[in-house]
Structure formats: structure tokens, C-alpha cells
Length: 104
Length: 319
Image 1: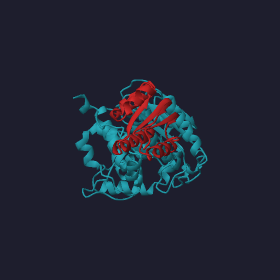
Image 2: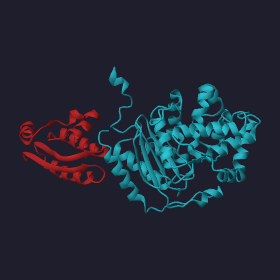
Image 3: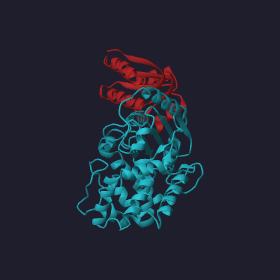
């Protein structure tokens, strides 16, 4: 069992990228890590479709007891999570240290 | 909606994605419609606070056709209220084609979106003279669009000359006393309503007026009575896409109305409207590219009424 998986996401999480991102995250979750950190620093947009992928990731994490943490979410993207009413699924942390401490 | 640039980019992407889709054929049962350029393709989105994003042939005019129907229904409700209006037309999806000759058990047309229902509604709002009834209708649409609109007289003449099926529907309605004995006047109102010329910017602004509960977001004119905007959007959601209405509600999930000239108007309550013009139609009479654009937009932005992003009502949260 791997300890913590870290995935750096970039650009948009939307129709054009979500399938690839989903596959990448699922491959990481297949190893049932203790924690999953999604580094969001370079993500500038999440569409509703992207949010759906994120939500199913969060639900899968909950099911297999992998702790999830979002790292360095920019304010515009954080707002999408807040407005969706689903922020509780996505604990957000300012940096790698805090994210790692949260999922360790 | 802090960063609307994404919307603009995405609309351009969709235009590019479907520009070379040449599926479908022009409507030809009204001969004038067969003269459209099948390659025309325009998309306009207007937010409920009046911001516009347009791409493609958005200045190209086309006749509004059946997209006039929910607007005429709204005007009938304003004038007669729900009870009286619904004595003349139902609100039940028929599952039949737009031109079906069929009435419900009370001998009313099934809903205001099929031709029979739209003719019943046209009869209600036709006014004292053929001129005044049409003028009132065009004036209201102009206020919603924020631009002076007009009837295309050659399309209107073409509709009338080939409109024997609609004429027979009107006389059937006369038989059941759904419409009064001024059958020609009612048909003139109906054909004229269908022949109003719009472009996607006009349509989207009309839709934004609905999304903005009846007020044009740019001119701030109160165009439609807010009590009945919901009624119009409801029948658009359940009956707006001809016999594709159920599938549309399932897949796209926003109130919409299509017209056989190739327009589609979709409205997201309190948020925005989308108008697409592309004259090639599928077998049910809906714009092929229009459906694709709306479907993708709904998916990407969670526009479906029951998308997990949508709360249904914010009111409960406010309690």
C-alpha cells in the first residue's frame, strides 16, 4: 500500500481534459493509497462536467478510505466548489505541507 | 459567473466543432424556407444581466417559426389569465409531430407548442383587426429583442398559400368552439407570428428577457408579465422540441423551442439564454447543429435542471 499519491493538474478541468484526468486519478486510486493530493495550483478553470469528475473521485476516495486533499486552489476555482454546495467533499489546503499533514 | 471568458471560448469551440457537420436537410414544406443557405451557422448567448457572446452568422435573419409559440402563449395568459387560456389549449405533451391533427379528451389542442394549440392561442391574441393583432405581437417581440422586428411578407404568403393543413386544423378547432368564427383572421395572426424575422442576437435577447423574469436586461423594459414567464418556460421544457421533447428534457434539461427555419432558443432560468441558427433539420424538424451545441453546453456548464450543480430552489436554503 502506497502512502500518498500526488497528482498535479494543469489548465482546465472540462470536456476537453476530464477523461484523461479521470483515468490518471483512477490509476492512482487503484493502488489504494492512504492519501490523494490533487495539486490544483495550475488549474484555472473547472466546468460543471469537470466538477462531476472531481466529485466521483471524492466519492471513490471515501469508499476506499483514501483521504483526499486539494492543494493550492486558486480563488476563482475555490468559488466553484463553494457555490456547488459540495465543498465538504473537497478539503482545501494552501500548500503541500498542509495537504500532506491532512492526509497522512 | 466571475470569468465569462470561458463561456465565450467554449461557444467558439463548439462553433468550430460542428461547423463541418452537414447532416440534415432544409425544411421545404414551406417553399420559401427551402431558399435558406444551409451552411449558415450562428450561436449567441446572452446572460440575464445582458452580456452577449456571439460567434458565426449571428446577423443572418431567418423566420422565427414555432419559436413564436411560447411567446404568444405568454401573451394570451397575460390577457386572459390561466383559467380562461387553458380552456382553449392544454399543457400536456402530445408525443406527436408538430402538425398532428389531434385534440385531447376535452376537444382542446394538447398544448400551445403544436400547431393546433398555437392556432388556438393566435385566435386569443389576434386583436380587433388583422393589422392590430400582428402589430401588437411584433411590437412585444421587438421590445424583448431590443430592436424593431418585422414580418417577412413573402414567407408569410408562402405559409398561407401552402397552409391547407393548418387551415383544416383551424376549422376543426372552430367546430369544437375552441376558436371563434374569425378563422381567417386567426390564421393570418398565426402565419404572421411565424414569419417574424429574427437573427440569433434577437432570439437570445428575447430569451434573456425571459431568463430575467420578463425584463429586457439592456433596455430594462418590462416586456412580459413575470407571473407567466414560468408558464412559458414550463411548456418549452415539456413540449418545446416537437416529438423530441421528452428526449430533450432528459438529455439537455432546459426549456427550449425550435423552429423549422433552423432556430433554437434555450433558456436557463435567471441565468442566460442560448440561440442557435443552423437551417439543416433532423427528421423531427429540429436544427441538427442547434441540438448538438445545446447538448454540449448543458453538459459542460451543468445547465440541466436536475444537474447535480443545481439546487432547484435557493429559497429553502434562505430559510
